Length: 466
Image: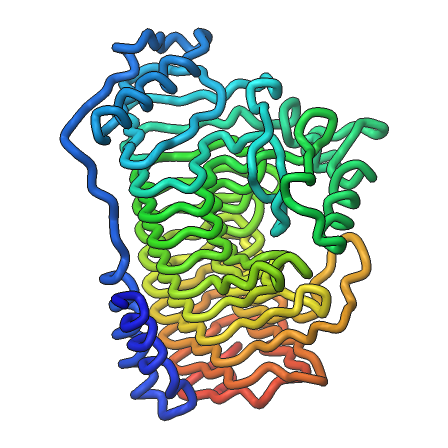
């Protein structure tokens, strides 16, 4: 009942998106704060379980998989608490979190994940680019758990690089050598895509050994009340933080420094009530990318990603600062981005929405406020309904994009375009507003196709007022 009342409150606050700008500002503030206040942040009993008491050795070479597992199990049997990893270098296989456990990294601690791929077997239920499957275990994994956390000031080192995990992307710059296996081989992504189309049961989508789909770094799956606080992630195989089908997720003060292929920083998927704050993203792909399933599977699952607040974050390198898509078939709504700084010659866009007519889906009610942008390569805002990389992406599912509101933004260099919108003639982009926005420099102020006219208030692009 509490969740129903909260959802009705959010709906009532944003339903007037096409009213005057002053009212929109009040609605944005109130709705974002309501989301944050509604999120349950897990708390844990005052019980500490040091992995050293279970035989751990912090020499960087001893395998501590069993010691960490035993400490977690003891914590669970005691009713919950904190599993402590002290200063040192601790080699391990995958870590599976359990309910009421806070995995805590003390200062100068480093958890180093083994390069031995056999350690990530047996396969578990996970996801790859918006499609569920049975695959190598994520490095840190939680399935159907409640009240879980990773906290502290230490570092998680995935040990991915040009000799480990990254070559499977198929890109030479990430270590792939011609003739070696990679993710686009017929036994990998093409097979998974076909299983998506055929609605093959997830239990029968078995990959793992003999296949070449990289695991995510930290994946809470169908879990509730998740906290990620203070830690640093480096050298990720694939997506870094991937809460999928989760409710109440807090990501606070986390650093992601990882420049590998598909090294997105945080990808909430089919998730609601998410707060990402005080973080630094320096990534090889999107800093934050909000997802909701790929193509037929996203439509079958039908869980909208919604009520997501991103604030007080710094975005450095990446394909996009805050992104919605491209796996977006179930839809995204109620996204609030505020008080963030985005700046890098290697940041392609600040705000990005990407989909196509195979993905379809919708994006609605996006509020971007009080943002400082230094340099981006392509555009401050890019909305693209023709997104494609490797193959044909045309289908019969025309996406809907509406109610995108930008306010109090300063951009030093907007790149090739200040604003780039590529909508569909069958369903143009609707209700995009800019208020108190200055884009000081852009090769072309804007390129807009198949969109309702943008509503400008006190906006300047390249010295021209709109």
